[in-house]
Figure 1 (cartoon, rainbow, N blue to C red):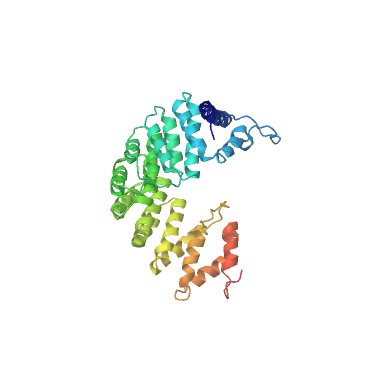
Figure 2 (cartoon, rainbow, N blue to C red):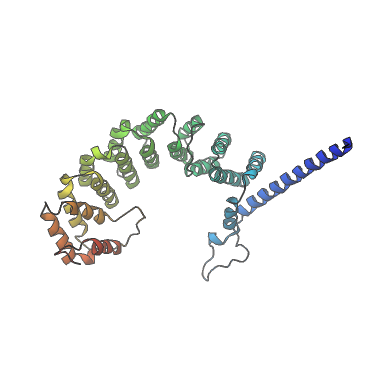
Length: 355
């Protein structure tokens, strides 16, 4: 069949124009989405309860944030193009956010590297720190652009430095180099957030090489977050060999939250040697009524629960433990918070300990 040459030309032109229109439509869609992400006004159809002046979950921006997750893979190149050309800092920041969400949705680690390459060229510290922090919340494993992140860790701006320290936890290459850098921070920094974020990252990438430096920080520091993150890191790296150190710190530290964290890890790794310390700890907690009814996460329990659950393993061989349980049941139920009381009622039901 004969096909005129001009017919082929017209067909190609039509497809080119159609592709152009599709790209323009996608660009307009993303530009409009970015505008909505910056709109904190009340969304159409929403209303605020009486006495409330603002609710972020009822804004145009909040509704727009849900639209990001509906974008298909084809939108990625359009967002990248917008980011590269955008001059407005707020709009550019939203483009970074969209790319990060799409990177995780489609498991596109190359998008993370694209973001890092561009953050490396940014001049605005708030944009750099915000999106380094966002990357640290993703679940993607990284193997490239480590030098960029290491340079960010060495920056004087604390916002950038702290976010970069957290992002190091995602790397699976040059771990020894990362650990050495983090140890150097433990040795030299007095900034509590430097230390806290470093502890948290060492919890993931650290080895026995970090143990003594973590112990020094725990011994010498008084900040709650520094101590608790250090304890978690030490427990993750070498917990079974650090029971005596944890028990030593239980006697040394005064902060109740730090003591609670220590109790959790002592009960995880210890044997009978912790019995006396934990009996004493339970008695001290219940020495007076507390104005508390804490909310515990799904993987958390009250300190008393960790302690009693541990002690019950040895109640047959140590007569002090049944006496402690009886004392709690007979005299201290009113001293327990709601979560503690519920646990005691469900778990201490042996003869002589009926609640």
